[in-house]
Every structure is written in C-alpha cells, then in structure tokens.
Length: 184
Image 1 (spheres, rainbow, N blue to C red):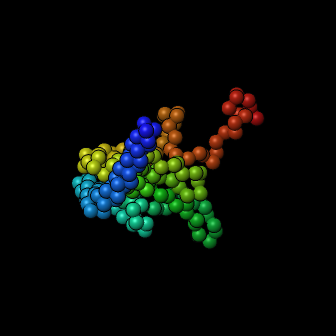
Image 2: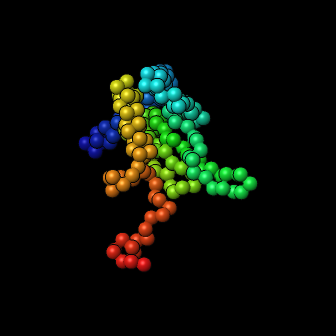
Image 3: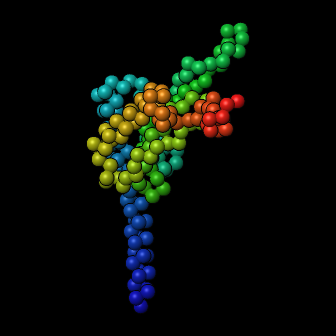
C-alpha cells in the first residue's frame, strides 16, 4: 500500500498544479494585466520616455502579452536604387514583454533591437518567470531598468569590451581560418 500512497501524493500534486493554472489565469484577467499596464504607463510618463508604446496582445486567450515597444523606424542604412530611390533597412528598437505562459505564470522578456536583413536578431532574454502573486511593483521598475540598460548597450556597441556582442553576427566577420594567425 505504500506504493499507492506515494502515487496518491503525486496525483494530489498534479491536481494542485492544474488548480494553480486556473487561479493564475483568473488573477491575470481580474487585475494583474491592468496593474502591469498601469505601472508601465506611470514609469513611461515619469521618466519622459515618449517613444515607448504599450500594447496588449490578446489574440489567444490565456496566452496574452503586454508589450512595451520602442517602435519601428528607418535604420538610417539604405541602398541607393537609382532615380533618388532609397531602399531602407528597417530597425526594430526593442521591447519589454510580460506574457502569460500555458500554465498561467508570467514570463518577462527583453526583445533586443535589430536591423532587418542585417544579420540575425538576438534571441529574447528571459528576465524571470513569476507566479502572479510574486510580480510586485518594484520588480516592474527593475525590469524596465534592465531593459533600458540592455538596449543602451546594444545601441552603444563598440570594441571597448571585446566580448560584448550586440545581438547579431556581423556580415563581415573574419573567416575562421584567419583566426589562427594565418594570412591570406
């Protein structure tokens, strides 16, 4: 019978986790989503970050997301096509994302800036995953600070810090065989 007691504990744990998912989803819908949006709006207003936009993406129920985006702009890099026509590369300026996971927990991520058709975008950086009751107002400020630091580092990339990468591989990296000190 001890084998069944162990199995019963596992079944009870499973039932609790499934109940938690329902509770977390309810907490998101009944206030957490609005609380996060309100906090982000306050931060944006207080720090004077007028270019930031906050959007709720609610296409899929219980997989909703709140996205603080810095928008899309011309990168300033373009190809002359002739006759005064320029083909601009588009730059995504980055975003801070709060998204529901399948189990009702909230993942907080940073999407780095990137320039389309110029290397590969860096994968999103996961800051943390929270149960709804764990996501407190001071955390949102800290997330925003992390976001600003990371996108500032991306924008200010140079070779002062040799191992610092801006999130994509350059189109003009040296071939591997040149790294061994060989000359072409």
